[in-house]
Length: 88
Image (tube, rainbow, N blue to C red; front, side, top):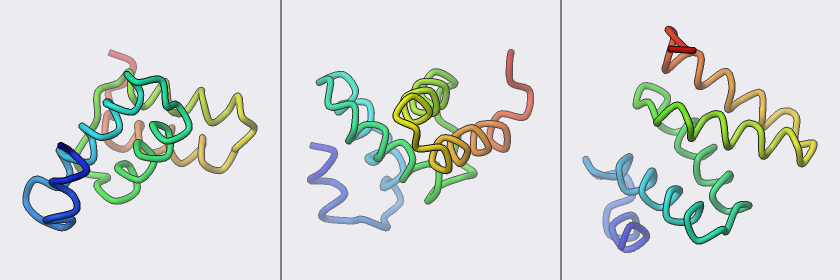
């Protein structure tokens, strides 16, 4: 359903939520590569719309463990910008 919403309106008012939902759905279905890529896409495309803390931490650690350093840095920097009070 999230991909369908993005296909219909990729820049619409609900695109951020649809992208976030797609990332969570991929994570829950254990499609970790696509989940991390989708979280990274959300962080890059919608930096002012924070994700849950766990999403940043999980995606950053996952990318770090895969030795995708620059992507992991992008995730962690995005977390610090979106959630300046982290850790809460």
